[in-house]
Length: 475
Image (cartoon, rainbow, N blue to C red):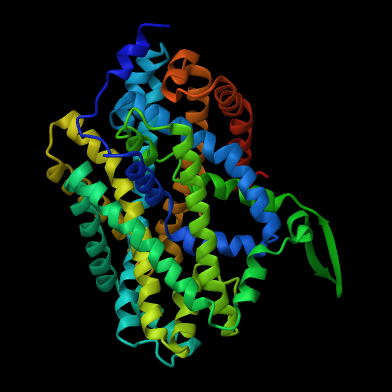
């Protein structure tokens, strides 16, 4: 065994570590579970074959999500520093080119971009908590909800206020450190999120449309999965299409917060005795479970009120409020639903801030409070561009490549930076990390290690390249 193995395993994080494997799993699940789980996964499942799509998605999780998550956690725990310093250190230890540190820089930058507009959307959710609790949606119709949403996004001062509140919530948690901040937050945020989901499912079971919601989510429809159909001259024409499979691949990658440094920095706080493989599998299962349970809560309410299940993000802010406004107990359960959204966003946001804060503490000697304040301020300023995209900068003359500032950041981060980061993580872990180094970290039986190594070296990079080409419109 090479000398680098004991050298790297002696590394200790100056930020501390999680008190247990359970806390790491809750934290990483909190990072993975976000706004997309609450609306996007249930929606794309129903539109792409229900149970058939779920089966393909789980296969994609196994081929793409879990191997990259295992790799990212392994790199983080081996380096025990911020993603930037971890990749710098590991590249030096493995005799690789220093440019591999760009994985860390890219992840931190992607986290900046994502959080800047994510905070704006989370601000909408906070605003809707107070609107639902105040009875604003009681007896409201489609035109009324559209007016409420329009009044919110067209008012930059109001959006700035909610954006500021959410950023402050996130910075306070991160500033308190690993044990006092991140750990305490996820210890109550994630159980609260699960309880709220179960309460919402219990309510959905009494809407009279629970079976219809389950059918929408879980009934296998292989025609939808394998064929794309459209009406031509009054007749339906279908052709074989791989689009749903690419959708499953893409979502399997993005839903686990891969390629943005969050999982790597959380891995750096992971106890040495904890199983990386077992933790990654459990996190992936919990993330998928949350998404499916969210669908079980949302779609019975949608069908019971005759609403359109394919409304995408509009389902949250412009469709569901109509249902909450007309159903018995809607004021209470509408409030709980938007609290659930805020919790999901909050647990993800703190993981997006942490990589940059850790780097400032390590490289600039800052306290966590000062580092979190600087990162929060920069992210807040960048978020103003997303806010203005909906009002002051909404005209065509403010668009670049036909996209608003908000859309451009989203496209750049989600379609380019994250897949590229995930691809580079797979290549480095599979081809540039020595077998001894990675095997030492995983500490698992040879057949399972060989399965991971074969997957991360060949299948996973191929799948991520397909995700990337599909995202940029090549496939």
